Image (cartoon, rainbow, N blue to C red; front, side, top):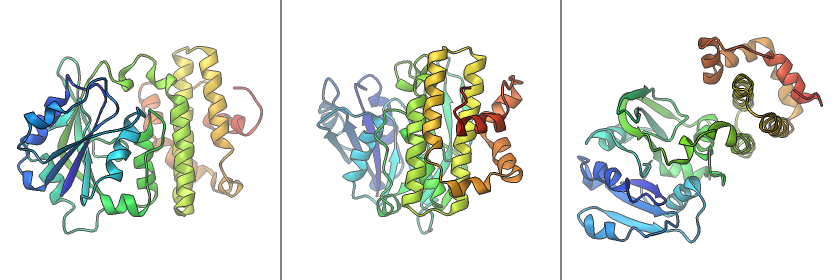
Length: 319
């Protein structure tokens, strides 16, 4: 059985299309739908009457805590073998989306199946995203793997989704990537992640989640090389965003707060990790980092080298 968990906060205008995409799936006998209400202004009880034919239950949380903890509330209360997360303003791509994901994990030892997904823009054009692990979209998780390793969403209100998947990835989960689209990420102007200045305003959460991932890797006794790779990916991303903020001429106060948060992250890196900081290890990860790739491809001016950036973090130098 697959538990499709929909976190919902004041999503009354969009949730029916999300549910409709569940209702047309071709393997209803395998599906349980759980809507987790994050203390919306109005409850979703009316949906039980409208969708009596679905195997659906509605949970209402005692307090509003954001999408990550709302998903976690659903995880803690599921008894299904598998889980899929569907946002209340998104939908499945096709009637065989769930059965496609399920067929790629049944009778295997995979812990996660990751598919491609489409981003639907306001003008209804679409952008294809490949089958990577970063996003929540288009993924099916084996519940036992998540619960046995006690992998949980962090308590921040943004970037908690990427940290959840990062822990899974760096912990060495067996992930099957499939070149099929199963999910549509729809553009919702009212969502948190679409807000103006979301990236720099959410950077403290991003860095807090980076710290969380590294600490969880140590708790799970992840291989040292994987932990190094994890740390380096975050440092490359921090560097990339720093360059972006400088080129965008973001307010000095915000950039200063950003650097302070990165230095906080830098303090949790064990001294023995720095022995792995050599040209071969760094260059491979640096040029493979998505944010750095975008900077290079878009001919963005690099105001400071990566090495100088890292060395500045280790010292009291103000960037």
